[in-house]
Image (cartoon, rainbow, N blue to C red; front, side, top):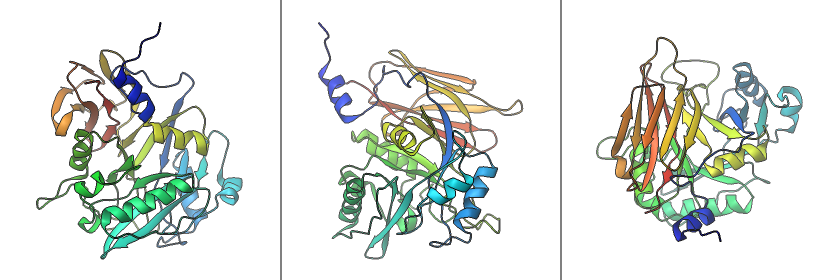
Length: 329
């Protein structure tokens, strides 16, 4: 008779990856994409066609045009720029709201319709109302740039239900990824949420607005992306993999394989011949559980971990973040 532990059953119901759970499906492969981009349909400087061409020419596999409170139908663009198995535009929208001048922006991935801002009586309520409306539109919600204007706190996020993804890296120069002045970095926020038992995945995005001028002061493309492991290049497969957490976030580090087993968490990296890498295995509250300098990085479980995730740092300054797997304690 098959016996399933209560913790394993709960994790299955919640969709949590567990220590000892193997991923992915055998036929899956990696697809590179950007999840946060703007065009002339909101506050970008280029047409949707120009933006689509920029990403396709640089060998991205998929792109989400996430204009503020505007849903671009990608059908026409896919007819011109799309290619089966090679490039796909996925519907998206940046649902743009605020509370007392604090920006509350939540991306909707593959919505069935335009999602209007829902407002709320607090920052947390504003996030919650928009997350709920995005779910009603049959889309995946993700919180954008929590530290923009220092709008969203850890306490706010702990009050929100149904939000399981946020930006751990945003390429816009004014979003305060690293925190400061006593405010936590986005990665510190992530660990606080995970330590509290919240399921939360972390993505990296461009938040690109400016395609016609390049410089450190501009929100240019090419800074942050995700590599999604999916069985096909379709909106449903990509968004499904995002919801499962079957992806990693990157600003330039390449990972060829992520494996978990009953005893270890293993990464296979692809550094250039002149590049050095450091992998940090991170647990509860941001505690460093292990470190590796090798292209094959392995962490062996002790059985006491609440969760394990990894951050890979390159000698070039690039980083990658893998998604947490959760312990059975």
